[in-house]
Image (tube, rainbow, N blue to C red):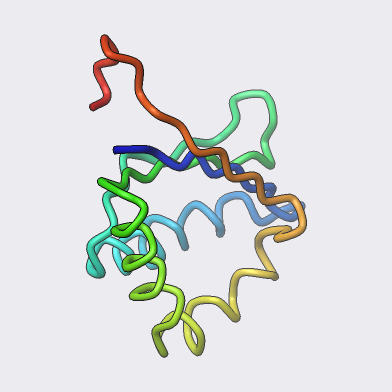
Length: 106
């Protein structure tokens, strides 16, 4: 099992729109395809920072879920086109993590 820690930078003035879009559109859509989303977070001091965490059982599962989400017509035609207005895709940072043995997040 591993996790993806995804860090995004929102465009100026788009913080509230981005969080709403994530929570009402992107996350529910990804969950409907089988993604496990552990949570979304905003920066306390960095107002343009959005962070979220996803969990995968294996690399094979991650590949299957990526295909189910990102190759879907819904993602390509409805969801993805709205993202660049709210989030700076050039600033995306993705870190893969494994929980330590005593971590409560397993």
